[in-house]
Length: 313
Image (cartoon, rainbow, N blue to C red; front, side):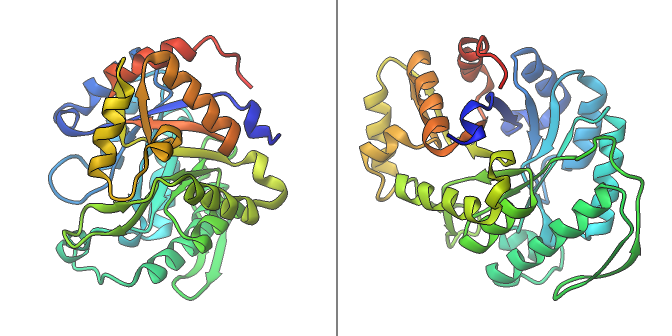
């Protein structure tokens, strides 16, 4: 069994909806409910700027870690980004986790006057950026001459943590393999192509798709696979005595989703508290996923309380 089979669970809460009117209060509540990480998304426009919001949250919380899920790297410069991340890490007492993605919403690129390049180009730029940011966070002076970045003599004050965790969220063999080789956390989402509206995604929650995604991470990681934390962004949480009804409803809304896959996918946590706890353990056993992020803190707090007695691995 991989080391991940013994890794303790972590639970993240992503601020959403009304939380964004008072992110500090929502973060305090999530901390009180037992969440390990409070996360902020990154969509230019209405809502809060993630790094600024996390700075305020850092001052208002004591225990929870703080993260981005995920910053749109395509709109950022790696040196400035690493500078902000290291500063936030030091000011938060070493609690920051930097989540990055390639960006996918065309309107955000249009609004910022940034060219919307093909996905393969955005992902390639992200992969280079991860390598630059990693070295800067570790306190190195960086020279880098790649296809998408040219950096000379860049240096910042290192992060407080000896290794500030970097999460990469996305899909595709190249990106997931690179993440396995270079980052600390891989964010699995079960999402496919962006739909015509420019915001929503196709969904692929087939178990064999997830098998393949984890396989790409494993291939890239090699001997370090046991050190890579696998994370799932949960799309539906429903604590209920009638799991089959909710599963049937979700399957009716998600093209191609079978009830068999719905029962095992980590992106859908439905059932009694005991059933959800059993599913979390099954996902850890099959895929090594131990870090789950949800957007329903009140309902999911019951699950956290039920699984809390599990010893740290």
